[in-house]
Image (tube, rainbow, N blue to C red; front, side, top):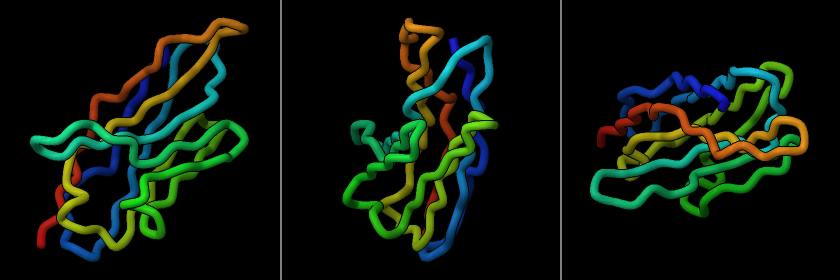
Length: 120
């Protein structure tokens, strides 16, 4: 299994910025897709942004133009730069990774979640 450790959440005023990081570790593996889901209070978890090993990205319409996902393959780390934050961005952000060991895919790995709170 791949272990994911997140950092970078916190409290920020509307219009501010935060940068989330998620580092993967574990025994020998290769990671294809990494990204972030988020879950607002009382709502379902939704995909915020994701990136493949070759740098192909996709993101939710609600964050386009404000959030940028990037990745350091050498460090197995994914970042989410969040700018122009809005109160509706408040929630717990979960990192995920889709990895494989040789030809065998592993179950999706999840981070523990990091709280992002945007005050109005």
